[in-house]
Length: 196
Image 1 (tube, one colour):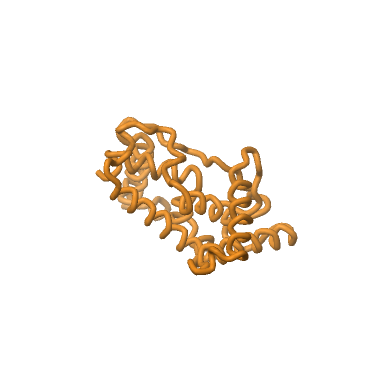
Image 2 (cartoon, one colour; image 1 turned 90 degrees about the vertical axis):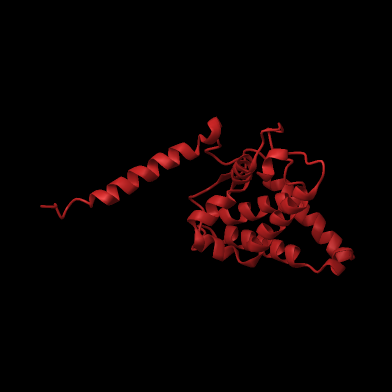
């Protein structure tokens, strides 16, 4: 007679199988993938889902940053060469540089992810790769991408935060995808294993 207090055996087996797959995923092909991010976000200031910010001045600061990022990624090409467009580009570049300062504890998880995504979308997305050998593949890129942005974890775990980030975050994913597609067309290809 099954015990109603215990979960069904099939559920236990699925959980065990998922745990084993999770452990194996970190060691695919004998490679050790990153288990941390290259930035720090303060969970005491941000719940990661844009439900609350602990302090009003932090809410104002990061909503201005996210608004500026939104304006920047959706600015029409014709306006980018104008005086206002160039000034905005300089300000956004300063924010991007700030997002890479080691040891900084950022108060907005979605904000820092959006800033880091700009680094991949508006520059060479391969510049962050530590491994530049022939065996560098798409899993290595995704690992590097996620450890510097947290974007893949955002996609898989926090839809509330993703939706709170709005269309600018989706636009940035599109920009990174276009950069990678252009890179795949380059011949000779710098990372021949990445298109497998």
